[in-house]
Length: 199
Image 1: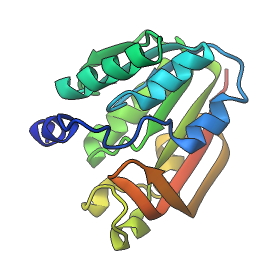
Image 2: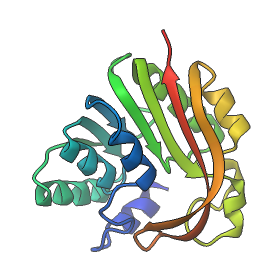
Image 3: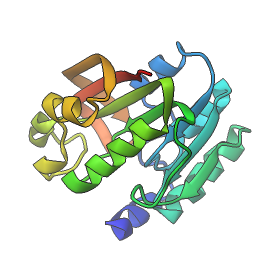
Image 4: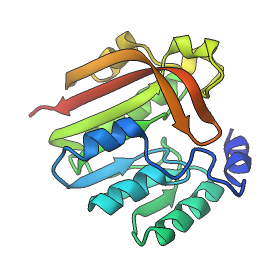
C-alpha cells in the first residue's frame, strides 16, 4: 500500500489539487486559530492552507514523495507547516495538545481505523474539535475516488461508536460534487462529522 501511494504522489501534478478540502476550509475559517493535527495529509494542501490562516500545523503522511510535494507547495505559499513522514500506527503527539484534529479522506482497515480514531481523540484538548470527511459505502457505485474495499468506507453508526467519547455536533451522509484534482472528481457519496471533546 505504501508503494502504491508513493508512486501515485510521485507524479508531477498535484493529484488532489493544491486547494484545501472545501469542508475543512469552511470549518477552519470559522474557528479561533490554534494548533491542528492533520494525519494522512498527502501532498499537503490542507496543511498549507491551515498554515496560511495562521494555525500551528503538524501534518504527516507515510509517503516520502508526498512530503516532497507538500514541501514544494509550502515553499510556493511561503508557509512552514511541520510535515513528517510517518504511519498512523507509529505516530504520536502529546495528549490534549491539539485544538483541531482533521481526518480528511483518511481511510483505514478496521483495526487500524480504531487505533487512528482513538489517537485523534487522545490528541484533542478539552474543547477541541474533530473534523472528518470521508467516503461512505454508497461511494462504491461512483468513479470519483476512494477505496474499493467496502470495509474501509465509513458509516454513521461506525463513527458514532469510534467517537463515542466526543460530543457529536454534526454527523451526516450526503451526495456532493468533488473537484479535488484528477483523482477526486465528480459525484461522490461522503460522510461528514464535527465533534467536540468534553472535559
